[in-house]
Length: 281
Image 1 (cartoon, one colour):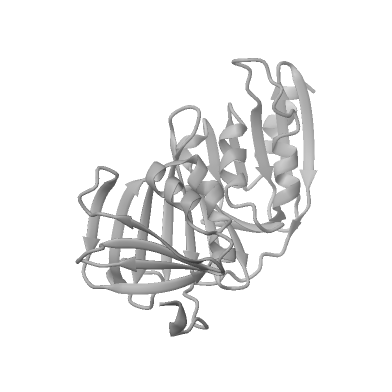
Image 2: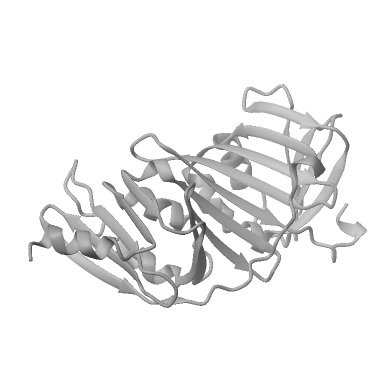
């Protein structure tokens, strides 16, 4: 039996098939949420959503739209499985970063359904590698219930500006404080370290602020340890949307362009730290 015929027969038995010309377009996005070993994959007709959680206080979601793939098919309304994200990334980057200019790694992902492994076929410059990764029963994912109608404040800004601020703040601090307000200082990030407090202000009319919609003053504090993993996504992104809802929950959404100019999104949800007392103010 010809290899193409064999693969065609196998494809008909899979509930998920996804193919693309550059595996890096997937691996880069997944690296941005790789702060825990396991991830839950949700596949629907819209594309893939890969979710990572920690301590039920922070959740990261990588959205890889169906249009990123040159072939994509899901045979069920939603396919869900848990996978070792560390192993998946190792497989996706199995050819390393030594590729010659213009050479990309083709990727085919297949999943046969509940209990089946995730099958990867990677091809670069005529060299073919197949990987089989065990899948697990998915855990129940925390619903942060972050509804747009409950959003109090929202700011969209260029990522470059937030990267600079993060580099100047004392990220050894336990707490990162967000102040968002319709009045000055409008948007302020603060850290509190042994050497004192550090602030970074963003005027609403700054060239770096693309959209400013703050309806009331909110001051919320979040554990730096929970937000640090999102810096990976910040480094890849061009724009960032920062939202807080009426409970003080934080949503940071990063817009990331891949090497082909296509857009993917990574979103972090973080619960406010309720243990911080007023001496930090």
